[in-house]
Length: 190
Length: 336
Image (cartoon, rainbow over all chains, first blue to last red; front, side):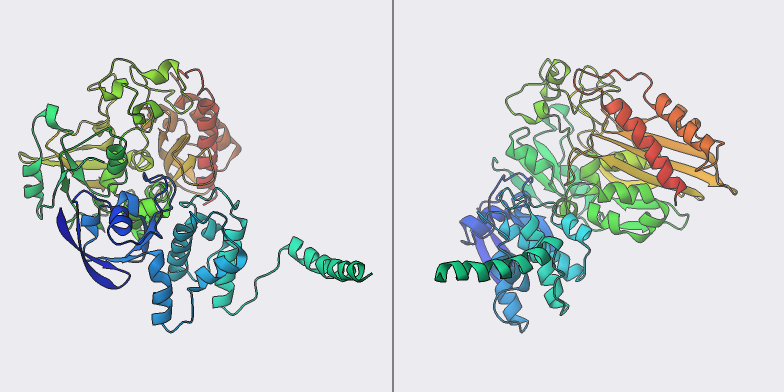
C-alpha cells in the first residue's frame, strides 16, 4: 500500500492504494468514479478509456503509479470542465449522444465519448473516416455504431454552427412521417 | 494480477542494476515501458514477475530525432503514436510511420512504445491461454501445429509455429534498422533482423536474442536517400487488429520512367520473425515502376517470396494473400 498523488478531473488527490493497482482500479474502487467501465480488463474493449494529458488511454492497462503528476480526465470530469470553460450543461459530445440515442446498454458510452472528445479537441472538423478511426478502439455490442457516428457528427456540426446533412433515408422518412402522422390523426379522429 | 514491487530508476545504469543475469530468473523481473503487452500477459498469468522496472523516469529514452547524417534515432520509450506522427519519419522512412500507425487503437498507440512493440510476445491463442502448456511456455508441444492454426506461420515454423506480431519490426527490417542493446557490461549493436531468432535456432521460449540483463535502448534507421517505402497490412476486420499478413516494401529508383535500382521486401504475419526475402526483392530491380514489365516482376517477386512455404491445415490462404499484398504495395509506390 502506498500513497498516490493524482490529478483527476482537475482535483489534486491523495489516494492510498496497492502499488500494483491499475488506474481503473483506483478510479473505481478507491475514488468511486465508476463511470469508467471495467469490461474485458485487458485492453480489448475500450470501455475503460480515460484521457491522460488529453490523449485517450486504457485505464485497465495503465498502472496508477505511472500517472502521478499527469492530468487524468474521466467521464465524470467532462461536464464540470465544459461548465468551467463557460459552457452550459453537459459537454456537447454528451449532449449529442443523448439526443441521438447513441447507446443501448451504455457500457461503452463513457469510453466512446472520451475518445470522441479527444478527437474533437485535436481536430474539430474530422472526416467520417477519421471519426471511425478514432473510435475504432471502443467496441459497442448494441448500437451497430450508426447512432454513435451520428452523435459525433452532430457535435461537430453544432460546434461549427452547421445543421447536419440529413441522410437520404432521413430526408425520405421526414416527408413520409409528416404525411403518415396526418393520416394517422385522421384515422384516429374518425 | 499478482502484486509486484515497482522500481522507478532515474538512470539507465540504475535500471540495469535491477535486472537479473540469471536466465532462470528473467521472468521474475520485467522491464516496464508502455505496459500494453506486459500487463495483459500478467493479467492472464502468463508471466508473474515479482518486480517491474519502470523505464519511464529515465530521461531521454522517448526521443525521436534525425542525426546530422540523416540517421533516424528512435528511443525505446517513444510511443507508437509519436512515431506515427513524426514528420521526418513520415517523409523519409514512410513505411515505419505507416507501420506504427497501423498498430492497435489510438489508446494503445498513446501508451505503447517502440521498445515494447519490438519485444512483444506472440498472440497465438494457445500461448495466450494460461491453461495450454505449449512449447512457448516451456511445454513439450506446439498445439497450433495440429490444432487451430489459421493465424499461425507458413514460413520458418517448427518446432513452434507462432508468427511475430510486430508491425514495426517488419517495416524496420525493410529499412535495414539496427538496434542498440545495453547491459552493465557495455553496449552492442546489431541488425534488427539478427535480433529476432527462429524457434529452431535458439531458445524456443523466446523470440529474440536479448539477454536477461539487457535493455534495447535505441533503434537506428540509416538514411536512405532516393528510397521510397510503404507498409501494407491485411487484417481480418476493419477495426484494429493484428496482421493476417503484411508486407514492407522499399525501393530505390531513378530516371523517367522511374526504374528500380535496389529493393527490400519483408513479410509480416507469416513467420516467427520478420521474413526478409532478398531474392524476391532482387526480382524487382531493373524494371520501371508502373510498367507492364513492373507488374510482371511484382508477381515474380510474390512467387519467390513464398518459396519454402509450408502452410498448416488452416492457413494456406496466407500464400496468395501475401502475394497480393506485394503486388498492391508496389502499385502504391508506383502511384506516389
